Length: 235
Figure 1 (cartoon, rainbow, N blue to C red):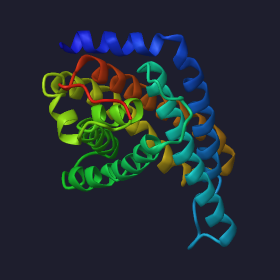
Figure 2: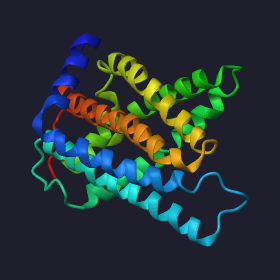
Figure 3: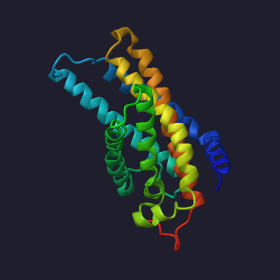
């Protein structure tokens, strides 16, 4: 698949009516949780107990909420026989792997941090690197949500070999700048007065929602346009 064909397929996915609810719900969830977190910044020393509980609650709401929306979107777009909202084994496995992959930005920050780059370039490149690294597991995670993870990880990774290069190009182009916006806004939230928190949260939510929906649509395209033989039985 060429880069042009890939982005057309992803765009067609995102234009489908079933994604509208995911767009709206993702933006609302991200705006709410980001605003709650930004309202606590910056910390003067260690956060107090109330702030710690707010951070924990916002973090849990974000992780669980995004997992619910992501799995539902993949199941609907992938024509899964499973209920979009069922929290079955595939749902929990998706949550655990997603949580593990969330550590990739920290690793990419450390790698890119070794180069003397302007701050914005650092944010963009580290975000692009983390997103491309996570792309390796994109088809497997789609399979977990849609098929119930009946195919082994290696088979899903190898199925991407003819699509990885164009997918990596578009992932870097899209995720890099959007990750840069997210990192820059998060930094600004520690520096600007509290009355700016809502505006910063809305900007961050818009960038993060666009990045999330692009990733989900790309996962659906990679799942549909690559195949594993024999096709795994649904569980």
